[in-house]
Image 1 (tube, rainbow, N blue to C red):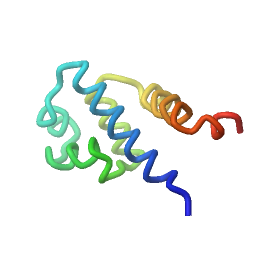
Image 2: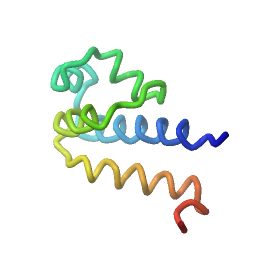
Image 3: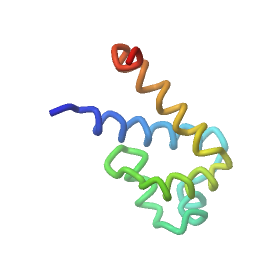
Length: 88
């Protein structure tokens, strides 16, 4: 079995955290804008939870970025960690 889902979950979390911190948004504020508990945001950021597509849209709205930008950042990081996958 591939570790791909685990790797992607962690990359999503790290990317969301990096954007949130760069923009100076607290976990509490992001959670409030997404109508979730702060602990849910924390679990995403550490790679323990994977947000649904609809939740990604809400998180991106809270971060004031386009979902496509988030996905592209995740894709770039994934390709850095798995160079052979980027060639497909």
